[in-house]
Length: 399
Image 1 (tube, rainbow, N blue to C red):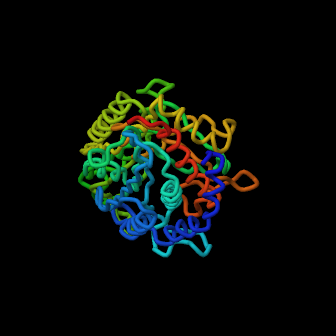
Image 2 (image 1 turned 135 degrees about the vertical axis):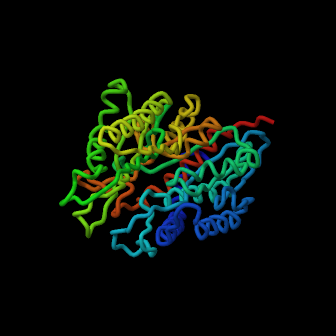
Image 3 (image 1 turned 135 degrees about the horizontal axis):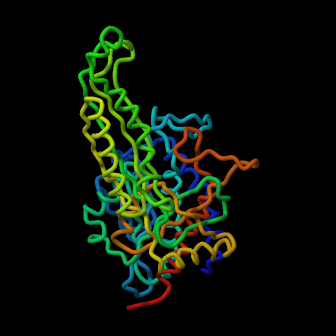
């Protein structure tokens, strides 16, 4: 079937994809708890005639589909399934039914789009080789891709290339965007615990070592790392996301311990190493200056997401075949993180953005916010992109 007919056929069962997407949205499951979602995925894949393997990397699912034409090449198509720990603020009928959890990043849509592609390709197997449909858990924890790889993902389901797709609010529906090389940052967590004696903040503060003073100086000093330790053109980010210490009902008590945690984003190992070193140096020196101690912990999560230069044109061609070259743009590097990076570190491939749209006034609810929702108008197009990509990659016999 010509590529320009793929979208038309998939649009014929868009209502089913919408129903699947909304069902997943109503029943969000977070990292490594995607049991219901994985069962739904496996059920649909088997219904459409794919070979299915469950519990890959705890709750991951892989569907295998062989083309009708001879070919030894194989590609992987990956979608993430997990939700976030966010209380949904939407009021529509398919809002989350699980308190404190919601699909605030569109993984419900990603799963439904890849399922749509599996259905289409099961009916159109005129490609040469094998497609591995990879449904990954725990992307938000940056541990799911690694868990699947450590469970033998690419040994048990060999591929020559692997591709990812993620929605982007603000990009119009019907448009795509990507770039060669680094597209998303490496993402790490860090934390510092300051310890002192604590004491009576009103009667005898002079007899205490005050951890809050050390903390205050550190919170300011953190933001000197980038402008004073990295080159001004180096893309990176260091932010504080959590501070805790003391008792709310005892404001007259100076705490003996306070904790601060944050994130670091980077594109080069040298930048990561500098950030890690300076966080510890600042914490320890500022704690010592105020008679306290500091324990710094750095937690590497995932490396930068780097698109293979030779695979980006393949992804661009697959999208352009559906929407035209003019609607496939170049996107700047983002300091967002994505654990698909682990898969791209193992196999060449490309990470593509698909538009999730915006309101008439140009506003939109971004991912990871309580009012976000995946745009169902993008479902059929995303499924068609995957099918077009298979036709691009597995068009020729190589046996």
